Amino acid sequence: MKNNAVLQVGPLMPIVQDSILSDYGAVRLPDSVRERENFLRLNGESFEIAVTSGKVGVGPELMRALPNLRAVINFGVGYDTTDMAQAADRGIAVSNTPDVLNDCVADTAIALYLDVLRRISASDRFVRRGDWLSKGNFPLATKASGKRVGILGLGRIGRVIARRLEGFDCDISYHSRNPVEGVSYRYEASPRELAADCDVLIVAAAGGPDSAKLVDVEVLNALGPEGYLINIARGSVVDEEALVAALLAGRLAGAGLDVFADEPKVPEDLLALDNVVLLPHLGSGTHETRTAMAELTLANLRSFITTGSMLTAVQL
Ligand code: 8YV
Image (cartoon, rainbow, N blue to C red; front, side, top):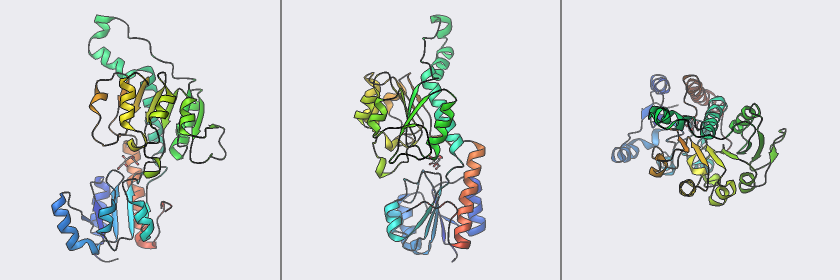
């Protein structure tokens, strides 16, 4: 590998950033659009490897400006911000950080599930406002145990969520592109059928063009005014406008959202709703898991540089 062949795209955890700088002399892509254009015109040809995060990725234009790119090393399991079609066309390898975050993302889904149904955050606000003193008892919530839960996307994370929900005696169904072998959960043929047959719909499908707005107005209507939506996957999987409209009109009982269509922007209308729990995309955000993700990111980089292959390459 030549000098200056590793490009850092976007902010990374300090341990990743420090290590790619000290071990491989990585250069950081400027953040400002003008500086970036100039930088890429002068240096674009020298980079063979981009290290990035799921939040930023290597989009179509940047990828085109890196004609000798051979690998994208992605911090995060989701790689929907990277132009996978172009990567496949050009034979650019892409790695991600699967499995090490399953527990924490699944825990986040369960936290949202319990919070939205039992109204934990809303009741915390109730106590802080002094309403317990002035208004008396907090209104009754919805039982969380024993519910019918539909999981959209029974992949690595979806399966861990399902396992956790077994402990709550839930009746679990799912929809994925294909039925998953070796699971006892009920398969539903479409997102709409899944939504029609459950009390709580949990979105755990990967983002990207194939899953864009999979949860649309029809799916939300099928979930109905007694139904709850939880999304720990990507904002793009849900038609956010339709979701906000359904919540405002009472056509949905509530929602727990860790992800949004245009992060870090959250639709203004949601801020005033007490039946919605809003998290700042923290699914994998624990010291333990982020450290494991950082280690896997660096291991993929090391492996690509020394052997030409990655430990956890994405199938192109
Ligand atoms: C990360 C995530 O916060 O792994 C993912 O796909 O969404 C989160 O774990 C994010 O990707 C880090 O950039």
